Amino acid sequence: MSFSLKNAHTRRLLAALLASATLVNAGVFYGVRNVGTLVLVGLTALLWGRYLTAKGYGPHWLADACKWLCRIGWGFFLGCSIIMYALTWAKALPADSGAAVIVVPGAQVNGSRPSLMLQNRLDRGLQLWRQHPGSVLVVTGGRAEGAPYSEAEVMALYLTQNGVDPEAIYLEDKATNTRENFRFAAEIIEENHLQGPVVIATDAFHQTRCRLWAARYGLNAYSAICVPCWGIAPVFWLREVCGIAHFYVFC
Image 1 (cartoon, one colour):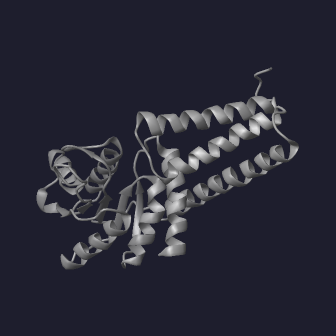
Image 2 (cartoon, one colour):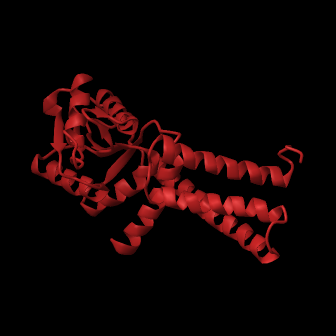
Image 3 (cartoon, helix red, strand yellow):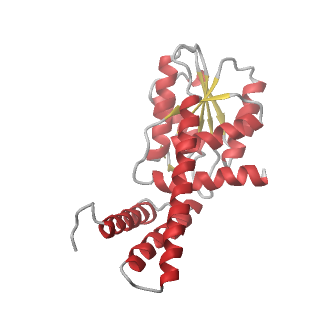
């Protein structure tokens, strides 16, 4: 078999291998197991089914089914991701904004240290805090079962170690999901009469759902995208597509 990308079988094989590698990387090396992982398992199986049936393994109807399910499934995912990314950039915080209220949603922590994903969010929050003098940060995230510290406590420690005045940090340490992140953050903003545009420092895949929940609780929030964790981003994009569907159908 030729391995030229002009060969359709080669392209199908590479797509299936890439999806498999992404799944193994996220599930085995990073330990990510969420609804996005399950969706990726299904989409990866479709790619392998498409490759094998195109090679002549299985009946004709199965080949057609795999072909169209691949096109519909992957097309839907890519289309949703592009729309979400475009909406996020359209809602970016203007560069000439003054002091802002920077909301940093929580993520996994490792003892008293943030995970790489959470550190990237915090670094984006730090960057905004330095670019917009007088800004405050609202860090939101509760304590996982058995964890010594809440996500908010770990986040506040990281920020103070990097030069943020503790008086500029507001902790919310009860939230267990994105909905609660913004429900409780909105309460903190209202109770403390915090002024300025609200901006969310988080990953691109997370921005759309964050702004939806922020709007639900009365916050017209801007977006500030942090550096992505490329190895696990596809799984989280898949999760967020499902999360947004859940928001519109059930919330």
